[in-house]
Image 1 (cartoon, helix red, strand yellow):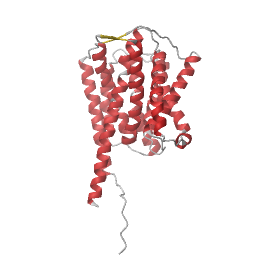
Image 2: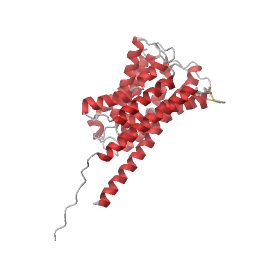
Image 3: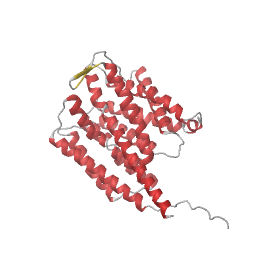
Image 4: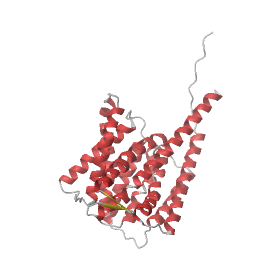
Length: 328
């Protein structure tokens, strides 16, 4: 029994480490979208066009792998059609559309702050809906991360517009749904299949918004400047689709399955810090000292939450399977 308990503990530790790695990979790949898209925006691409191509490319890349992962058994898809529609509508399409609608009415900083308050929303939902009361470490992590976000996003002179706030809250709901649905382990859907289905639904919905004119689409064939290099527009778009959509969503689902919604949502805040780093490397936008301090606070908040969640797992009672005694 001691050996069995050791094996279970070891497997949990391994799963937690893999989950953290996947969550960081997801956050870092998501954070590349801003710097890569900035060059396209400078050449006349509309945000709607960039988002549509990004999500559609991600769907095209991941969909074949999602189909293979089903191993010919489509029953999980039929059982989870509503979940796939919700994931694509909220976790993909609504998050993207609402954010860009928000920044048309308010500054980017406060819009991002509202959107990235999703970990607090996840904590509140799990507490009120499922009775998962947050511990002191989680609450302390929220406070540290919130303070860090304010510094990283530099809200000096920021003004709030009611319409912009409403759109930003919509984006926050979408991100929260993304983390909560990622953590579902009772669906029978492989992570690749969930990501593929969500990206496909999201691409279709964004495409419909573009067709009816709600999502303005403007493109350009001009090359894109990244740091000291000039790359074709198709190369930047391919990276956006494959890396910041395909890889980001697949690893995000896999991380949520291993960590749960609450820890995964906090690790997702690494995206903010990583975005500042990539803006420095790719766009020569040197971060200010206050942003560096804010980044450290965000990372400290993530670490505090993870330590608290790990402690909760250690003290949680577990029931291990007992092997029947052999008959004499």
